[in-house]
Length: 590
View 1 (tube, rainbow, N blue to C red):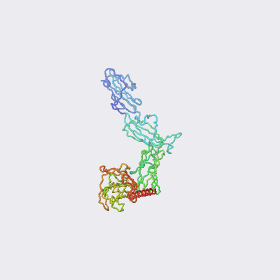
View 2 (view 1 turned 45 degrees about the vertical axis):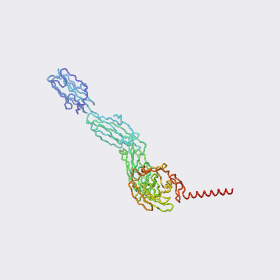
View 3 (view 1 turned 90 degrees about the horizontal axis):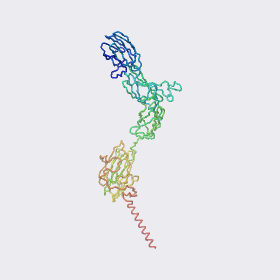
View 4 (view 1 turned 60 degrees about the horizontal axis):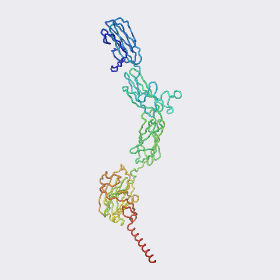
């Protein structure tokens, strides 16, 4: 028996009739002692026990005791109206049902009445369980729910008049005979009567509020929440959870280093002989297995089990799995075929092609040779040429100046030679020794391929003669008709920029490079206009002219010298003379 604190006293419904002349528990001349199961009871106490109470009454008085009553819920369980002496004692077991009862012991003399009133709670039920997830779970039936998530979440609260000693979740997994061959079907028509496996999850009984995910498997899983109080009273509530097939295979997201596979059509090229494949497989109904077959370019295959079948279909922690595998590659196309299967047999078969090429992707990008017209000019015997080589890896850049009349090389400038660079800029004065001089920018990329861009300087006209990119190799910037290309990111393995800015004196000489620190905020790789708007000169029309073997332009750009030259002018003059002679001859005959 336990005594409850007075702060939780219930209203006593039993009214005790007092005779005139005294108050209960305060009457002079009458002593009343009451015990329940051997423990003293005071007026207003509240007791709780799972057993039937045994009440003992002892009364003494200097007056003759006339009557003694023991009442439960207003009903006399003991009544003696003819005591006739000054002392009295009684011990009696009260037959009480479950729940709260109001008990009163009354002793009466000719003049006075004294009583003790208390409440007795006979606790024969386990702690109350109230569910918030799922709702409407009753005591007398199993709540049936469906889910496609192997982690089913329970949320509930418990309460009791006394301490709660135990809160357990008993998991009985019955499975599905169509999915799990080990299911036990002992009932008629295949009814599952014995669980395949049972697990008991013990919770902290001191907590009165619980929120817990429980693993369930394909078919039926019965979750029984069981509570027990200090008297050994047990209460149970059951939820039958059926895991259903969502019909969706597992999703696979594969990533490795800076590479991301979008889907099975994604092709990846790497420049290293090993590749760390990393991926994440996700499925709400649970992942049964993940296997892969690695096939290298030589044709040899190897099967790898990344995640084996679980010992139980109740797959806690198998909704999301991350894997990593080191693949040995051979030059050419290597394949990594992944098969992920969920608990219902839905498969996701994904194939990845990883091409191993010892030459890096960055080295395969063709550099772009850019001529900035707004920063280049022809000024007598000196030409200022602003050229940028970018969008690739550049091993070397050489600028050569050659007269078209003498075919002599007047000047050679080694702008850059050595380590691979993502961007090289040449901004210097070049000597012009003949009327028409060709300037060639020769670029060698990291693979060893040479890319040449050429233009002609017409010294007398003060103009450049340059064709389009296909004809000249230049991409011309700095005018309204210039097409702006998409900027290309700098490859991580190359050094950003080399820029030269020197003046030279006329004459044949070989220049050596001096690397200057450039302001990359002004001259970033992929810039579509020349840096320094303050230095911008007038705009020009993009060039479209080409050079003949003689060094003359084939067609005009509008920005450069008109078509023709010495040979073109001579032909036109001869045609005019012939026309005049023919006209005179006809006139004489006439």
